[in-house]
Length: 239
Image (cartoon, rainbow, N blue to C red):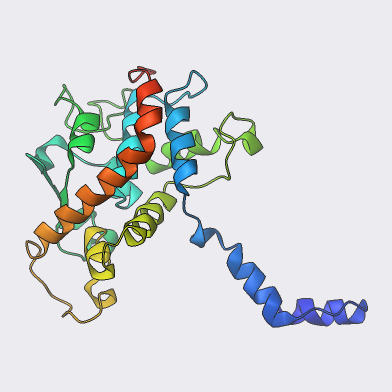
């Protein structure tokens, strides 16, 4: 930024550096989240003939709108990790392999999207992989990026990445009144980031509050998707 300011000064252009930094922050891709109208447009796209996503990826992108956990954690979900409406993400798959196992409440909409058990251990199996192993994040990202109009696709909204779904769910949970600590617990932020609690806590603690938060977000999301849901066709099988 300093070199940029000196260059502009030599060129006779007066640039307010603090304002320049603020503008850069405003355009920081790490701040990207989807507005509700963008979520609805994306949902419609998932059901349109223009969407080339294989069936497991359709389910992945739908379910992540409700759950909002880290992309790799959800993509690698296994049927054996799910007990009723509780999904346990093993400690070894959490960020840095250091966090404790994480309990996720699966709302009814997500259970419907996950569908029946099927013949594969993975919730989102890649039919091209032996044994139906989970999809990789790189391939999921490739399908998503190729969908945007700016990249030659048909999805006409500002590009985003799978990581932005987590920020999207957190942002809208806050908007509808879920407290910050519960939001952070839902999405497995490190305990150090949760103000007022110790670095070590019982993973079963606060499950009720987390479940209520996910249910509240499900109700809010479905209220916006209702029109799109009514027009949506069943999931297409694209392999």
